[in-house]
Image (tube, rainbow, N blue to C red):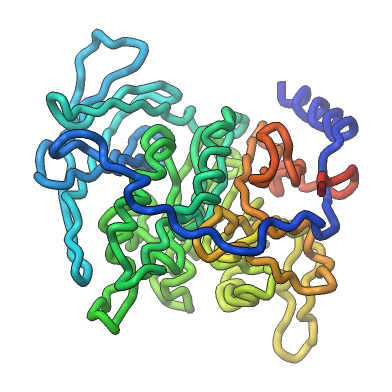
Length: 466
């Protein structure tokens, strides 16, 4: 079966009319002006006095057998229980998990009651039904657990960043929800953009939670914090960073021995996913530095061959927007990524799309002058996908000429689909919002750096750039 997959994937590569290496800047330009955030009343609360809302789920442990269910009740702290059962066996005993309940204040805002319940000891690759609330306020949802971790377990992720809550944001989310392939979302930061409103209007955190519920209540979203999660505003007396985000979005950071929910890891099917924080200290001897130094050697590529990193500020970015903002983190960690053969790095922050070649810039020692990115078979592909459609608009100011390390770039909004086929091959597509879901504006095969470290550029075909 393993040998068959290699032959099959090579055959597809020869026959497909998809991009292996775009080597260009798309001529397509999304509308240059930004969309306004949709009015809050466009995201109404569900009917009922205290009905659960803003429901979202994420993986609740390191292996994939737990799920964190989070929701908000606007008026009362109870009920704070989730009831769940296997979808295929509705007559089985319905189990319950009790939530930890919290709330927070931010300037002139007080949140509703925020609940986080962890459902444990779930079966792999199994659909579950879960209910929140009581009586006529009961709401029912479902999710499917990931398959058991293994090297040739196929799995498909959606990838989204910098979403916000505009008309363009809605188009991005609707396109992803309509795409039947995605089973979980890798989210690379910048959620609500509440901080773009006066006094960091935290009602926008509530409206965003209701907006994305159509996906987040049914699929685990793997969360990364961006700069718009900082909510640091000394001018209004708010001196604690990440307060709204950390109250609302729980992650299983302790399962990977992290000391902070802003950096952590999980195993998911055939992937090992590491989440980093661009806006927390990462210099030598800091907690994030120490954690990552110990974390990377733990990855067993015989178990989870695909090593994927999520962060917010991109390390390789040929857009004048946020240019080189990720440089200091790149200098700290890039050599580790090359040493441990990270496959893919997804980032947001820049509101456009860009995919790099496999390159590194790790030879510079101040005096040798070797400070140019070079092709490196052990290096990741860097993908900037901060193109969710938020209120700040598109970043349409690419540097010219296009750097040699940049494979494809486009000033558009959209989302991506990453299909892990087996331990050696993954297929990736980026869907711009302008296109129907059958059309990919950028598409390529990725070869695993550990199991199949061949040059993806050997077989070339064309990028869809219309």
